[in-house]
Length: 345
Length: 140
Image (cartoon, rainbow over all chains, first blue to last red):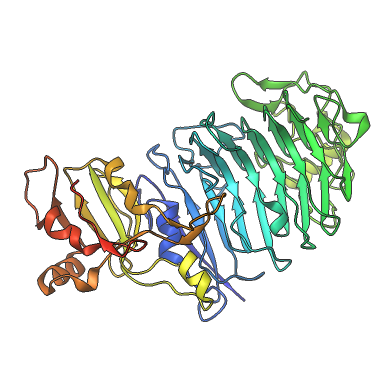
């Protein structure tokens, strides 16, 4: 059984730091995880002094498989993960000005998990948050992009700007992410590899051309549930050639693949302040999601904050955030949620 | 004012293309940081060495961490992990020994007039552009 080898990445070089950038970690740990190393390579990202990690990262030149993968994350048991809203201070964030599609994170390996990061691209020309475009298409793969905030603060120049792109290259599970201010939010291009793409519970805001794009070939199993796309998109909040399965996807315009969820305006805590937690006054996303606790492709239970959405039978919210009135004791929540909380406690 | 973190050992991949495109080789610059930056426990020999260039802004030396891109591609595609490589093994014996023992060299360039190991003029001819196959001739 593969051993997790955890290295600490901290731009501030706090106690226990192995690497001061994710890029240096990738260079230092690069190799064959499947052979003698028999390893899961883990980068645990911290931010002890408030400094952002400012070099883009390309993950390439490794040998990985389903049991020997690369995991880059902020550990929620520490204090360096965002709380569902872009945060500076002691929250880890990766920002870069990598242009022309290189991506703040570029993934060219088939077994990679990116969990709980804040990712920004400040480039003027073709700014990309996470790119899989350098990956050779393969069905022997598993890419998980979960609980991240992916934003663009650059843009305006030449080339299209993408939040998360190239998903058609691998089996990809894009879950509980907040993506905003790109031209395209989440993009599945055309490819014939018979991979699975699950786009679940993401919140995609103000992507000027389109929020979620699916041009995948019929050979791709593409599933979309519980996504929110809001803002004006010139080609539509959703552009797709058909999903294998979809449900409960909200659009602000008339392009959701699910007709009952079209022309819905979701109320957030502060859209102007980029706080995309659901507002207590929201009536469109709250309580209207599909329960994916037992999903056969990618089962999960928590939201982007790590808050419990409830198990089997619970009513879920749509989007990356599950609204939770933390001031209420469990006995005042819905029966299902109450049971869940009691069990969790 | 800059420091360059440089890979000191080869990474390898059994596939030749993956090896060229993906793997850092000995002497390839990885990241550039300001003078004030302190390095982590793994960012030193045997995995890495550091060139300290106190007189030069970070932006000036960022070109050394650019990948080599394929020619003629509409969409930029990486041909080699890095365009530049510091020819560690071709350094004069004294310089190489000092670098690998201490893990760093301080280079005099720009406005810097403090203590140093070598000048940029001495060092630049050991920094090779892998695309043009010529050594650096420009001043910083």
